Amino acid sequence: MKIVAFVFLILLGGCASNAPKETSQEKKFEVRTVQKEFTPHIWSDHKILKVSTEVCAQKSTEILESLGFNQIVKNRSYVYGNYSNNRAVIKCTTVGESTFVYAAVAGPKVEIVEKLRNEIVWQL
Image (cartoon, rainbow, N blue to C red; front, side, top):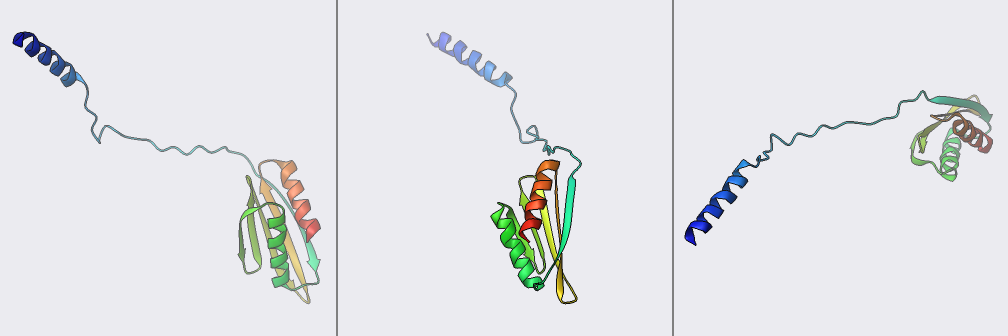
């Protein structure tokens, strides 16, 4: 009986020793960034408003929030925001006693870019 148990252990040990050992060097992972490539469409427009640049920038922030933009950043008189794969920017600049407002939207689908630009400019 001891011989059968000894042979059984040798066979099990032999099977286990033939299995490849994974070392940290063998575990190599390749990081790949998958991005859809597209040529962005850009639509822009401008207006002249009778408000200060501060009021214009605050209103621009409120407009982007109301349209569902996220990651909105206000940097003095610049306002940026993202909507899905689209990006919008609104710039307010003092011109004389008025404020010149430039709005632009860029993204992969022209219909959505146009609609977002129109909504932003109509609400200014």
